[in-house]
Image 1: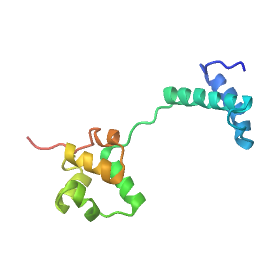
Image 2: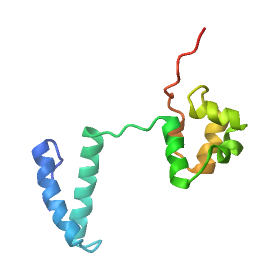
Image 3: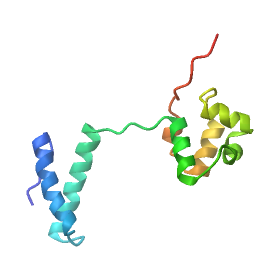
Image 4: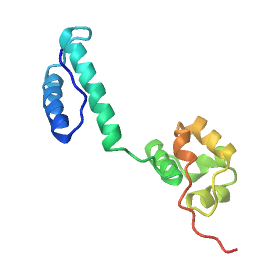
Length: 127
């Protein structure tokens, strides 16, 4: 089982060709082909993470996405954020999330905390 790290785009394309054949007929776990498939997938994941990183979403966009996914309204966020006007301030980027809100949104809606603690695209305020 000769396997090398993926260093270049050509290496990546070669591994993707080999892996795509396994998708059509996935080998049994623990078999030599299954082990090769698993190792190649790990190499592909590492290469893609290094070369094609996916940035975390903006906190407000993460909340809106979860609302859309779960068919929630602003009123449904009241237990996690506070009064309805506070919910709208968050959704309209007039106010930042507090640590307590982040914790409640993470636990209540399953939004990754890493997404919620990022600085949001807040509008500039007057001094």
